[in-house]
Length: 404
Ligand SMILES: Nc1ncnc2c1ncn2[C@@H]1O[C@H](COP(=O)(O)OP(=O)(O)OP(=O)(O)O)[C@@H](O)[C@H]1O
Ligand SMILES: [Mg+2]
Image (cartoon, rainbow, N blue to C red; front, side):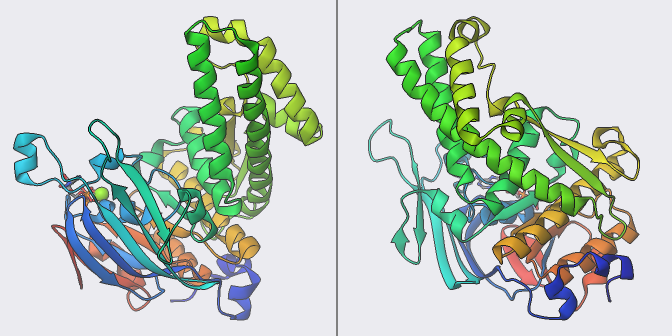
């Protein structure tokens, strides 16, 4: 099946000219004691992968495993110990296995890269398990190093409520999109949030030592402005891409809404840092009383408009909201492909739900044309028929996977 004319207009030049698209593809995936997978080895080619299977088979678990190849807490934001495979005897004793591992070999623009991640058991009684990352066999200082090789973006049924839920979900979604373009973004967010938590703890304890606050607010100002600048850059570029629309997917407009975002837009970065530093210092008493930090980019929101309806995205129907989300994810994949020369891996859980057949087919055409390795799941193999011959269609059964 070929792409429709309207869709082709929006394709990146590489796909139109027929040159090989940018590449990022998992070629082999190995799981050990990961959720309901005891041992799995899956070899794949670079084309999209479809995972079909009954409820509870392990489809979302597999996408979660792939999400651990990129920086962050994965698609379910699970605690590290929740991911370890539970067995029946664990359920009765409430104990759980103590390690899990995800290992993958990927084709990237830098050549083959081997990534391994998982947890190491706690080193001492009462200690916490630790996430470890290896790249080409060498330990990485932190999981942020993964961002240089892999970006992953996911759409899950939970994200169907993205425009209705609170701003924190939207920021998290946005921060994943930003990290795909600016790999250092994840560490700016972590440093900012860590300093903010420490400052809140000091305020809660009644500590008023200005030296501590000045040091923490300096970290918050530097990382806060850096992360807000990366968000602003991403949103501006993504807005331009999403305004084009893709085939039957709606045109969308994106903008940042927040105090720090207004400063970023209207003053130099160093001035914005000074401004945030000053606001935080002046707001100590107020924040202590409120029990929350009132200034900073953790208060920002992503505003999305459905341009074809001329309405905020939240005011569209369930299916229209989903279509906007898919539109943004596709525009983002295209943008990242073009600007970083490597697309993100797209993890599309239950993607066929809420999409009518025209949009489903358009989505399949687009992921094939973009050359992204998308991993899609569903309970009904029939819905993926338009991908026959263009994707690897696999059946998941009770923690094992076979070709259909
Ligand atoms: N830590 C764990 N150890 C063992 N099994 C687990 C663990 N966590 C989740 N499971 C089980 O894994 C199974 C598969 O879950 P998953 O969410 O991947 O299913 P799915 O194929 O996506 O199903 P659905 O179509 O309903 O979304 C479930 O039965 C779940 O209870
Ligand atoms: Mg699922």
